[in-house]
Image (tube, rainbow, N blue to C red; front, side, top):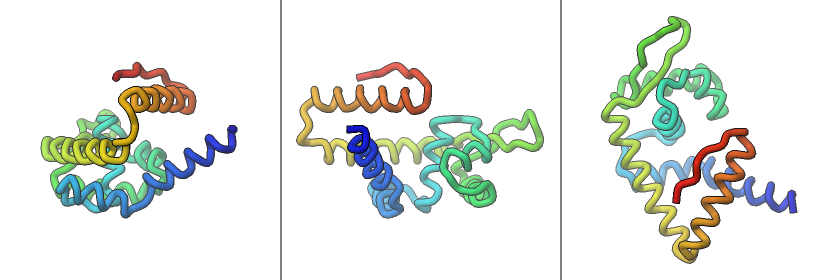
Length: 148
């Protein structure tokens, strides 16, 4: 059974890591971003004042690649640097434009999930959310409250 869990997770991760999924989501959200920028915007939205190094670690790309993407997002008005407490570390937050764009992305993602999960009952969806949150807590060592 453990291998089946891994295989299912592998398929889910593969689905989410496909650039065409990001392109489709950005198109549905009517957001003019490159697919490579999507994980950066989403992570900065979830973790305000995240550093470029932390972004690189979490996204799995090298520091210079993330830094170049961040510079483009700053120029485009999506990101801004937070006040630096340490001059060596660039901390990032979303601008108001970035927050609006992220909201459009979230709404498009929610609509896509609703469409994909139409055959799931409300009970099945609640159970899926509960079990996925439990797995996320187990894998990250964090405990987050579950909200229905």
